[in-house]
Length: 414
Image (cartoon, rainbow, N blue to C red; front, side, top):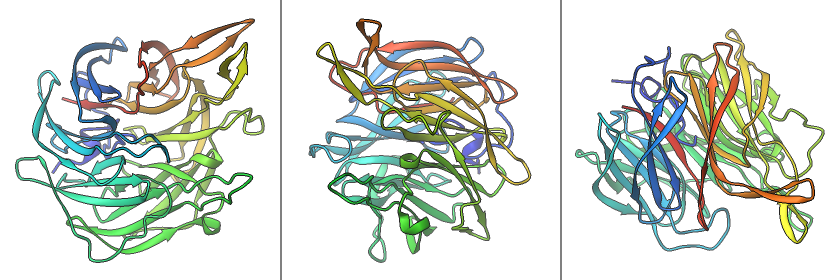
């Protein structure tokens, strides 16, 4: 059976990537999919030329939230919702929809009937053999598991043997590479002058055939000042990397004997200037390089202030941080911070050959340019990846999102 990293390095957090011991052949065709609201557009990826070629678009029942490929690379499962992000206005349309992926072109074709979900799905993934779909919900915080039918369409929900404590503000659900544990990343909420902080946690379950049991909560300091968002796994070592959104940190945990060691093995900063935070900063997606030598994280800022009657960017770091991984201990050491050339890189992915990184930015933002105001559009930024793990910016693609949002982007090898 193919391991996930062997077919997808990018779709690891966004479509977070699972397992690969060595980078895939550079000649392999790659499809990139990126949404604007309910519309999901396919791009051909020219890895050698570091270019994206726009192709056709399909439309989902509601705005795309996240997606994940089947282990066969022939199907894509997409979560959509009409709810606003965070604790915003609650919609009524929430689905998982399957599309077949043409293996020669990457064209998406609807497959089966979408299944309805109870509330907004914030993240979706499959277990390692793609027999079940795991869906995380942020409001109310929850995780649910759905069968994948024999025809690869999404199926009925798996009834769990008991109640599940899904913490506060679930943001991701992942299964460990050995398919033995399921982890729900719950961010909690930052405190405000009028409301105390809600604690975060990693909710860890024993996992078998879609069933979640024997829950354990990893919550350093009771979950205070611990706001995890996304995680990814090393391709060959028992190491797990977790981005801590609200504290702008990257933590490494060890996996041993079928359990997650609750002690934080290593801590690293995500920001280039952690003592110079000009507005709210939030650590984002995390992905381990297919060769296991580097791990990457996103830094996001988008807060605004008023200038000449318009909201303009207040300042902050919108960047990708690159860490070298100590191959003996797993410790991540930052070696580069590189600006993404746009605002708020919500998602990024690495192509399966490990030569290209694409970052997606969800909204246009005004910036001050001397005494004038200009707009930085939403869109995609493309970087080459060097043998030393460092990134070189190549080009960016502006995307007109209108009153919608780019929420997800991922790559799938064909």
